[in-house]
Structure formats: C-alpha cells, structure tokens
Length: 325
Image (cartoon, rainbow, N blue to C red; front, top):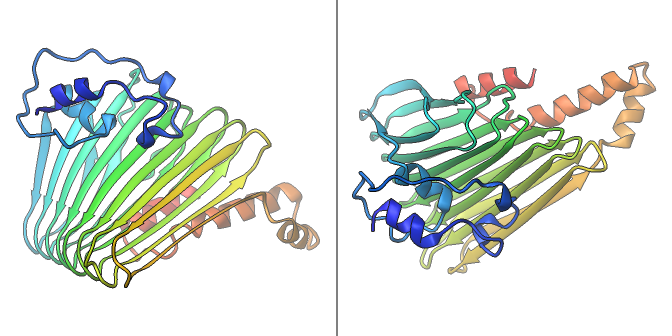
C-alpha cells in the first residue's frame, strides 16, 4: 500500500490516537492530496500521520550516501512545505548532520528523514535554529542502526508556533547506541511535542533520553517516550529523564513514559521532575550581591547548558552551546 492510500485509510489524527495524546489535533489543517503517489514503497504498517504526510504529498526525496570510513559534515534544509531526506551512512563513517529551518511561512510544514546507519558508524544529528514564526511543523525521523553504531540526536526548539518531533529508532544489532538530548525554550502560546519509539531489537543495545524544558507564558510541552525491548535482547540498557522548570503559572508539561519489556535481563529506568527555579540557589546568589534578574538568568542558563555538556566535543556541541549563549 502506498503512502497516499495508507494516509487516507488512517484519516486525520483523532483525540483517542495514542500517537497524538497531547497534541492539539484540532489545529491541524486538512491537507489537499495529489491524485496519485509517485513512491511505490509499501507503507501498510505505518501508523503515524506525520510520517506519511511528506510521502503522500510526493515530496521529492533528497538522497545522500556517505561512503564507508568517510568523515563528513552536512547541512540539510527543506525549501518546500513538504520534504523527504534519505541518508545512507556507511560502515565506520563519521557524520555531523545539521538540520536548518525552512523559514517560508506555510500553514503546515512536514519533513521526513530516513536515516540508515552502518556498522560502527558515529553520527550526530542536530538542530538549534533561531526562534521562528512557523505556525505548525512536523518532523519525523526513522533511524535504523547496525552493530556498534552510535547516533547522538540533539535539538533546541524555540518559536511562536506548534511543533511535533516524532522518532522511530531501531537498534538492530549488538552494540548499537542511541542518545537523544532536547531542550525546549518556550514562551507565549508556543507548543513543542515529542513522540519517541525506541526498539531494542538485539542484545547489549543502549538508549539514553534526556529532555529539558524552560516554559514561560502559556507555553506547553509534552514528551511521549516508549522503549520496546524484544525477547532475547539480554543486557539491553535504557534510561529516560525529563526535567522541567515552569517560569509562569500558566505554562504546563505532560510526560508519558512507556516501557514494554519482553526479556528479564535488562536495565530500564525513567524519571520526571517539574518545578520552579531553586529558591535556595537564588538566595545564595542574591545574598552575594548578584541582582535578582541576573541570578535568574544564570540559573536558567546553567540548567540549559547542562543538557549538552556530556556530548563529546564536536560541531553539534559547539553549535548548541552557542545557541544557548
């Protein structure tokens, strides 16, 4: 079944759809579809509307192959309202991929990224764009990893609209490692929603999730993270942590961790904290002569930077920390 047939079969997201639990689905405009789909790939098992939308709209795929053992940096930018990028990263390659925003205003922007990571490859994927006025944006990532590969996914999101990042990661061979670090800096009526499915399909695979939120005004954030550990996947290790600082009474966050574990020799954890700026730390700084507003900015900056400090020195880490500055 092609993407167009499948998305019409699914219909628009509904309130009872688990993939869209926290998203304001009433704000999704009903798209107009072409008469036929130019991609003949089978999407009969796909269940996410956002993953299908660019394909159903006949977004012309941009394919990039990074050879075995290569060391490359790349910038990716979609110039249309619908985009489809395919990255094939070779065995033992090192790649740094930065995703730039399309700043042309559309009622709805939707991008899909299919990323195939070869054995022993080391890949960083990141975006840290300035605040934008895009009203509604979807980004969907489908990441497949071979043995002993590492993918580090990092993002800072800010803006005035509504965004949704969905990720399906498949750790398909022993030693595959996936790490995601995200920071939402939101104000006004902005919203940011993350939905993850991480599939541990082999023994001794590792995934790490850290999401942090700084929410002001009436902004909203959500994090819907599922980890699925398959039968026989011994010594799989997964952790998830969401930290949120609410800077106003009207801001809010929703978190839904899901663990589906079909093997007993694994280690999987999750945690969630929500609060205000630490009053004791504020008192400590102010009591030493630091103006209150400056002290507040120092604590916020420290909270944000700690999201990315554990990353190895790389273009991604440098760019992310510069963005926070």
